[in-house]
Length: 134
Image 1: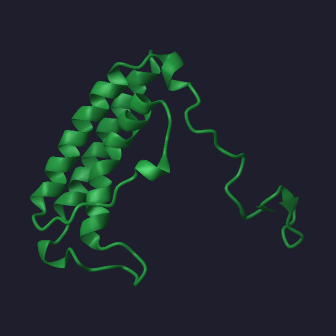
Image 2: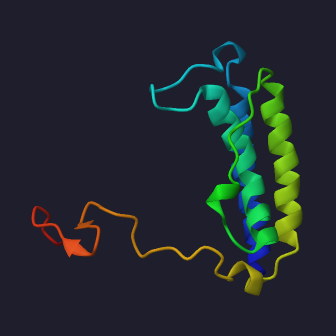
């Protein structure tokens, strides 16, 4: 089975729960922020609705450029979240269905081995002295 088939199935599972979450965003609370340094609920919801289009942009460009990232739209109608999600899901489905296994394994964004401090190690692969290995 091609990897794209597995990804399409996973996309549908995630889409179902994302739809449910976006449908529950209260229209009167779009400017609420969970923390003073956080994006508003409306911008966070728009971000969730936009995520499915990101891989399509990356595969189309052949590279991931953070400088191409755009801020979330200012949305006042919560139905826009679901509409945006559906548009982006259609784009994601089309992109994924066109990719073969080799394309999916292409390195577009080289990732470091770790992202920093974890429960067992600090950045630079140094062992933490306060953690015993098990």
